[in-house]
Image (cartoon, rainbow, N blue to C red; front, top):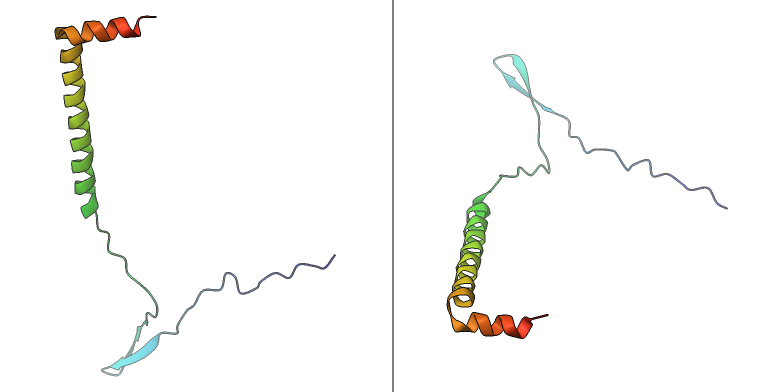
Length: 86
């Protein structure tokens, strides 16, 4: 059985050397960023999700209240209960 070759370049990170900038006979080192993407966190979708969840919860609450009223306060409830009798 052949020996497995390990990839030595697997964990090497890309790094660019800093560029030296001269200001008033002093040397300041300014790092150069290449290929770095700064991610801005956007939580605008949270308000939409909360609105959707509250809409669904409210509609289910209205449905439950409506079924409770129909099944307890009308003749339809009694006939449905008699159909389900075990």
